Length: 112
Length: 116
Image (cartoon, rainbow over all chains, first blue to last red; front, side):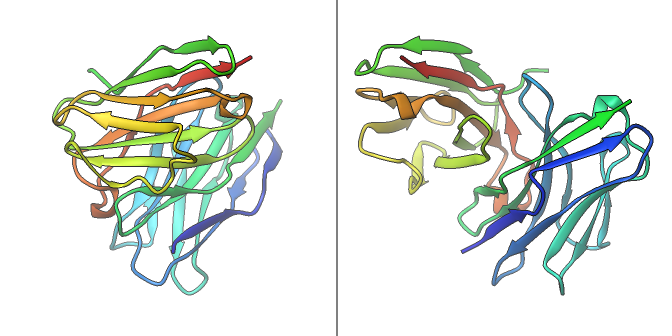
């Protein structure tokens, strides 16, 4: 069965600094991988997804993620964060049954 | 455009009462999902519909929880004899096909349930 581990529950960072949110998955089959963002008091919004092809995926708001099959990772990065990026970020993998399996989430806190 | 719509947005209920949570998926979306998010925790899968059949209801935590869907439209999640541990945000999502096909899954804003 697939599972997702987000290695950091909280990541504090200063504005304009780079950030990496880590995600590892376990699966015995090919997977599709997703990052969602949840802003305070809002629903989940898709940031980006990896289906196939280039292992570097670009998403909205300047975020990108790299699929690394050998390390079973899908880390999310942004070279320079803004205050408005403060949110909860969820990594997810699709399972063969069709649903998404989510990690526990990483709270990104951007400070001025 | 119309997204996934959930109602009520907030519900406070007494322990032991039954509650119904409603989800209107995006028009044309055949797949519908229910997830639960407890405070400070990740998303816990409850049930998945393809059309009006439920190929995966493995996440329903007990027989107090049930869900149904009318055709490829509205879904209702029912919690009977609510307990305090049922307090959470219940999120509904929909997609054109299954997530395993790489389809984007769109989420509603959730129904916040508080059991007192």
